[in-house]
Length: 110
Image (cartoon, rainbow, N blue to C red):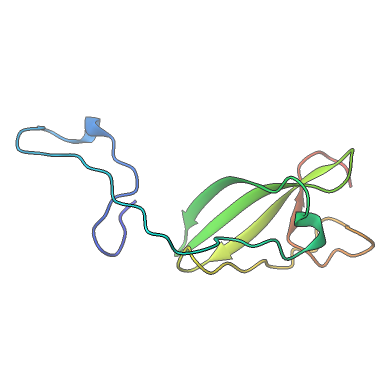
């Protein structure tokens, strides 16, 4: 994946015809603050990022959350810049009597 400033997120050296005069170096990290703060009741326990995917011009963050002692779910957030994230209401999984959340069932619980 290529960023706007020509940095590459992942690079496989198999795609380089010759390593002559090439130096591979890590892009230095930049501190930007909290990526995704806990803002909802279902994110209070065991929130853990699972993957970030760039698809159709947006970053998609999938992370697991523990709803109760027996159930987990996958939560979803989307961002245009990878810094500011929104949680779309997916209306797929009920939590505390409401489906207005960003949860997706991963265990066939509902």
